[in-house]
Structures are given as structure tokens and as C-alpha cells.
Length: 96
Image 1 (cartoon, helix red, strand yellow):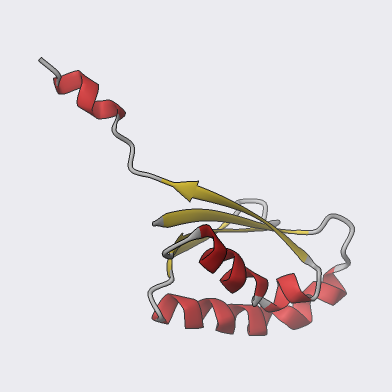
Image 2 (cartoon, rainbow, N blue to C red):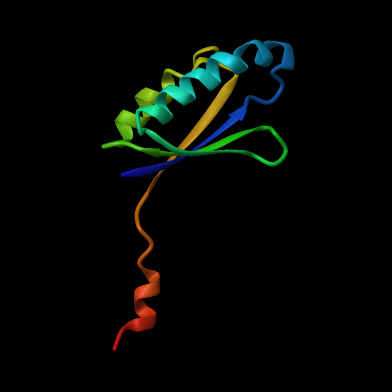
């Protein structure tokens, strides 16, 4: 199952608290990517956070992995996890 994770820096958190966590955060994201848990990662255009596409067997599994991100553990990153399913609306265009 796929999940969309939107991760944003908590408003008001100073950058001097965020910057030391960038490298450990990137290392953890890479670990999940190499393990086929993260499929894609994008910055949000204003650099306030990132959007990640995760693959996992359950919402609980993604929630546990997200909780292990260094920025989440330090309370500088807030996340929103949305379960996804295949879009089937196009099928109606081909119905007889």
C-alpha cells in the first residue's frame, strides 16, 4: 500500500535547531529509500518541508518509520500521513 507523507518544519522553529538535523535526516531517508520503503521524495517549493511517497503494509508501519526520523524525534518536523489507493475514475470513460 502507498502513503503520501507531508513533512513540514514546525512553524516558529529556528533554523539553527533544524540545520544540525539535516544530514541525519537525509541519512535516515536514504536508509528507508534503500530498503524500498520510500519511493519518491520531493521538496516543497518554498523549502518548508518535503513530500514523500512511502510503500508499506499498513498505516501503522509507516507511522512507526516516520516516528524514527531524526527531525520528528526532535520535534522540529510535523507530518501528515495519507493512505492512497489506485485511481479508477478513468475506467468510466471506457464503460459500455
